[in-house]
Image (cartoon, rainbow, N blue to C red; front, side, top):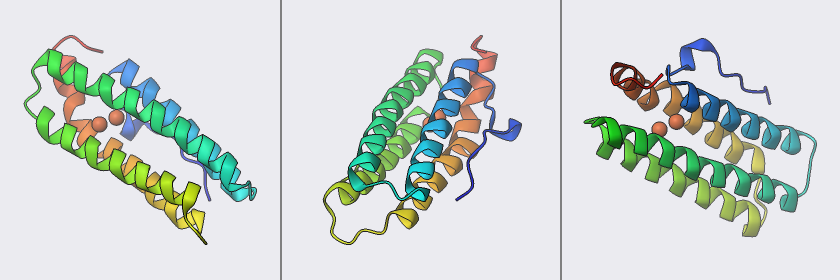
Length: 135
Ligand SMILES: [Fe+2]
Ligand SMILES: [Fe+2]
């Protein structure tokens, strides 16, 4: 699987959030490399747990910035974060406990959901934050 890069089109323009997105991509790449190298379920599970922990922190940071700046799309964005977290927790649970789980497609779907979210809904709050003094 190819490694992910956070190119300029995915920059949202608020540095702290862009940095966090970079860390998310790095973590997804670590998982991708572990899967490509045929690492065991236990190691993949640990990496997924790390991804989930960091994602929780990132979502919280985004929502707090949106809240502080009075962003009108907060409720919808938060609901999308909840959907993504549920998807991740379900995937991590399958990796840890599922029988005959084939990990690559599951990882592909996780990678897609991050990329779609950063290239989609996350782009909407960037300009708003900039207008409210967050860069
Ligand atoms: Fe984000
Ligand atoms: Fe988001």
